[in-house]
Length: 314
Image 1: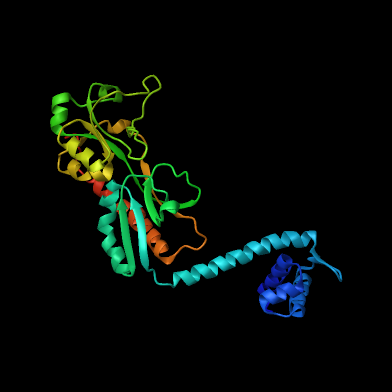
Image 2: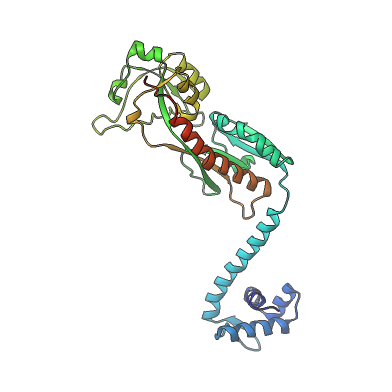
């Protein structure tokens, strides 16, 4: 057997199975060949790995510690070989993807490129704001924001986004523009309700300890961000929406932002997928594609475009 990998393999199999004979069967070698490989490894290391007798074979303390490390090495090697085999495999098959309704503004423009790159992948998109159980419902990949409590899932950060408070110019002319969060009290609001929990979306305001809560008069509650944007544009009240959804109406003057200096930190989109030891080619290419398009290049261009927008206050 070739050293050192052959010796490591022989040693690990012998330790796992308890004898040179059993290890030989597993490796397709004679017990003598396995024994010689282990002996050569011991000589190379200058330490005894097994206590041998005519009736038993057991690890020494040094052998036990070495076995733990070697087992991880061989597992990593097996993973690397499997990953390489999958890397050259052609991504194909149906790919179920769950995304928030509002994110179609980000997803749909880039999907033609993905389809052209991977024509044998069939995308099955489920646009909804419900928190799906990827494993129970057989979903391959999901895009979500907020906390990531499920330890069975792998995740990768996508682009950050900022929630903005917006209102139509006609509404602000009639009801006034608030200069601090406290001045929101008495204003009309359009609120988003999370479909999964039924709770109202909190507004991203940095509040003080002596004034920790803001009360507005809610005139409309809905569970769809597109509807919320439409109601806000129509002048029904102040609404909270992500920056990419507000971008066009801010640019053409249908909306203005309010309380920019009091807005809290940005939020974050994440890609989620089940934690499998070997990632399938179709999932791998989608994760890599979305990570590239919705994090680095697209975020940089979006930031430049946003910076170029006219001030929403003028």
